[in-house]
Length: 320
Ligand code: MN
Image 1 (spheres, rainbow, N blue to C red):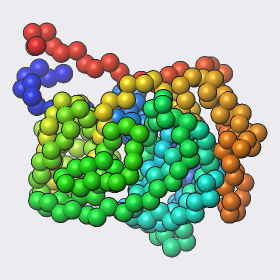
Image 2 (cartoon, rainbow, N blue to C red; image 1 turned 180 degrees about the vertical axis):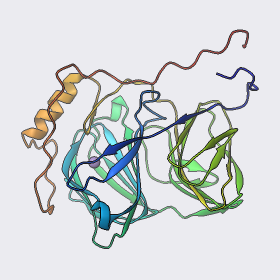
Image 3 (cartoon, rainbow, N blue to C red; image 1 turned 90 degrees about the horizontal axis):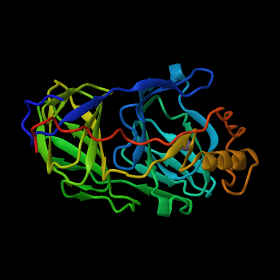
Image 4 (cartoon, rainbow, N blue to C red; image 1 turned 180 degrees about the horizontal axis):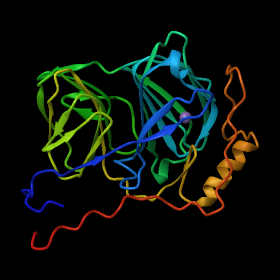
């Protein structure tokens, strides 16, 4: 920690992604920034995959057969392309750029995701939100919402969850949460009022963006601790800079994450896996997918241990 910083300057931790192949014959890969060793969650955001721009003629696009989820919500947000979604609620939806698609897994849901033949370039993010204990067995749900873009100081802002800069998403969340696409014109600088109880993560898709006093490059996720009331962003590049701002109050519960499941204990995961393998009603059936569902991978030999964020950094000696 640089102790020469003024106490009120937000410190930004730069989290870099790792490449993860999604599998399949031509193996589209994604850049995963959450979870990682240095950080499990930002608010209740517990999973962040960033992909593209991918020429689907080369990568084969996205083909994810029916698979289950528990204890979480999935957020699909595209910059380009189109993904066909089917789930065991009976939802059949097309996920398009600038449109929020929020699926609640709760006790159990299954879905498939396939990029459509209309897609030439696939580009976007796939995010998960952990459900708090009292709602983690929530009913299955699927919501679609198209935020109206706001234009402020050279920025275009699409608030898909929570509220920012006068934009308010009507979509209900189970914990205080923020999800926003912010695109900055070249040279644009904005200061956004934020909730002091929130921690934030800024994922840079394109451009070079300064957050507070830290420069972020494309694919970086900049983490900002709670306790600030404004976030200053500046696009230092010659082209537009596109970012995703995530936020929320720190999620204090420990979670156990394995494959597509979130629980609280190893036993939760073992049960969810067994229920999926047994084709239990817990997850239901995805109608209309032309193929087989995904089998669960083998469980690890060891007990799956809970994840939590590292303890907050201690203040250097001599500071209050
Ligand atoms: Mn999924």
